[in-house]
Image (tube, rainbow, N blue to C red; front, top):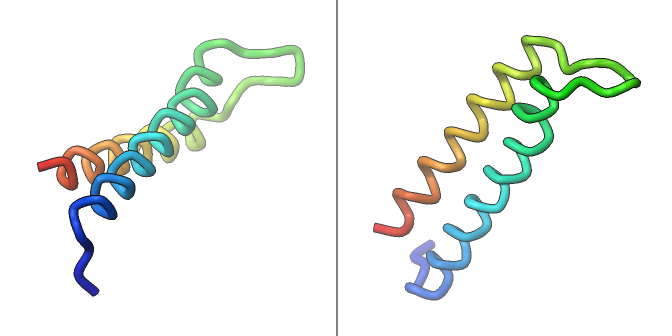
Length: 63
């Protein structure tokens, strides 16, 4: 399946938004614990890795 430029741009923005949501939910949650509890280190590492991966995909699609 070959995507046109508009579709690639939309997909890139989608991956960028996923990266932002993952950073907000896991990475920031690790450093700002709440009354419910803190994010475990394993969840932090997986969230940070997936966030970085989606950011790399987004940047790759923008080129």
